[in-house]
Image (cartoon, rainbow, N blue to C red):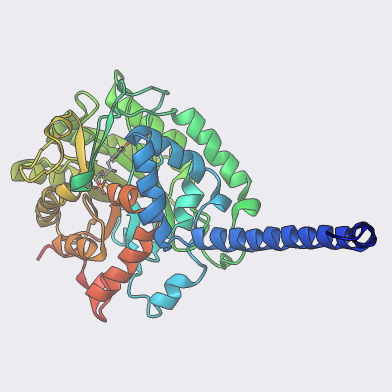
Length: 441
Ligand SMILES: Cc1cc2nc3c(=O)[nH]c(=O)nc-3n(C[C@H](O)[C@H](O)[C@H](O)COP(=O)(O)O)c2cc1C
């Protein structure tokens, strides 16, 4: 069909000119695809780095829940959170954009009985509760999400493995969790070493775009923020000795110390909430804290359960005032199982502490009673089932100066921080957080 001349001319043409053109056009396409993929990758990473991006709540977290059990997901999150640069970060100055009149700023411990305990101002009234970062692996990532308060622990003096697995159960339909970890902790020595390394790396870790000059130095390494350390006790040890060890070892590295006597998963721990026991424990702990050599001493908070009768709350309030502790966290998880729970009965009946949405009424009730018996001068941090701005404001109206959360974050991811800040501002409707908080009436 084709003349030889045509074929040979075609071959010649293909050899001499078409092949390189073909090659260069394939090369060009590969370069274009690689560039597009690179741009898409960078844009995707930039999007992922925004804590308010929907991908966290609606894709990443549901996928993790689908693939892994509760404890594995928790471990995976902490492993990732060890590397702040891989994680979302609230844009510098974002809080001033949404809150130009500083309606969210709050000052805690203004009336501490010890003059070496200074008031602490936080840029927004929302923090991370204990139990998420048990060993202080994720501090900077959690601050970067936009929490101005991060509480690590509870940390026991000696390392201990906690209870046998499984010990973390999701109640997804209830946006809740039951856990019976039982103070799994790497122990004070390991956490202390980690905190020292973090402080030594201060130059590398600090975001230099945040103005820190002129701000009081604190252990959060950020302005208007605080690092709290929650202390626990070993399963078989003497309680007072263990908390004293915690104050001595970790006190110098904490902006706030928390004495946790309310985990339901360590046998006998909650008995420390009984008045005489608590008064002795807290008095000793405050004395020990007062011996620390630093100029500014960390305020001490005691964390209580939501499962308390009014006489029990009254006696705790008495012990708090007598021992000159600086504040109370209300509350830890509950051992109650409300009828309203919708999750599988088998999971609902697991032993352990229930956290998340269903805890809120219990915590609010205990909080109201605590404020009633403590009066207006002592700082109270509210905790239990907070997942939006409305919840936070409900806690403020019930008597809390500040709020913290864990389970809401586990379900919603880092977007919960911005959501709550914006939600509180909506609820405040032009007022300041400090106008509505911490009052017994
Ligand atoms: C898995 C898990 C582990 C926890 N571990 C601790 C802990 O070690 N120390 C502590 O004081 N509270 C611990 N808590 C309780 C929380 O700090 C918080 O008080 C409680 O969960 C109620 O708040 P939430 O409903 O926002 O989670 C833990 C909670 C969960 C879900």
